[in-house]
Length: 404
View 1 (spheres, rainbow, N blue to C red):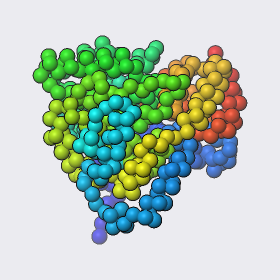
View 2: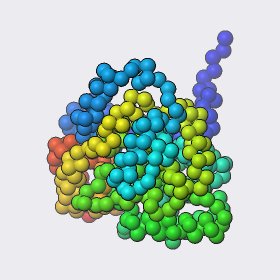
View 3: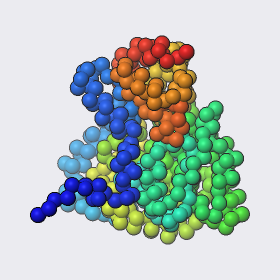
């Protein structure tokens, strides 16, 4: 028997670019593990991955234990509607209505395997091959893969590096008959910027105008894993209020520190064009993508903990320590209003050279080009306060070498 050694023939053409250009975030995370083994974990300053350092609220752990002990295991671990448990969806809708003065019910909520899965569900529901999806740089580059999954085309709006609010004139110019969706992310990864109510109203007005002019329906997809992480009293406006064809992709990964549990939801409002068909198709998409349904145990936990919150103050302490420390050293940073990232301009503009210099101090950062915004680095401050304290002297040495 002959065994082929041309392993690349086993890989699809669609996967090869992803294989050759694996996520810089994950690559840096693996580099952090390697350096930790070599120099000791306490001497490596890994700011690469947005993995929450704040533990889940105790109410979440208590709910897990109580549910496992008290609920019928056949029911608890069994199938349910592909959209999720009806009572869980109603609890989520009721919570949103209390907090944001909306009018949702269980038929507007589809439980998903996190926000990423939710985004794949809605994109599969609405995209035909060649349809265009607009994104605002800087943005989470995985959106490209999600859109390409359904043969969509990514259209990038260039970044406004003064305010990091969307460039609305360019946005309006790039909408055409093939535009099917627009993705926004607020609070934003990687900048921490919150899109203002004025910005969201203008986005909604532009979309409504273009729908009428071109005779199209465009879906505004709001990716909101960081909604609850906002500082200094900042308000994160609820996007469905600004445009009728809006869907919200939400995750409890950050708000309840549950990234590994993969639990979230989609909001598909009644106001959306063909709402009932869209919700039915999204429910089917949830199944045929292989998710089938969101994790049953975590759905029951969310029902009990729907209004619980993570310790935002801990992230705020980190934000202040790192932002103040970096700016005092002479680095130019975007002051984050939300999320848990600092977007820092690289001295000299060469992000790759700067990242290599940072690695000499065992500081691990993610290049801005991973967010379609070269010349910057992303610093995830969802780490321990003590690690930031230990890292600041290393940043000082880095500043001395790189800031002219």
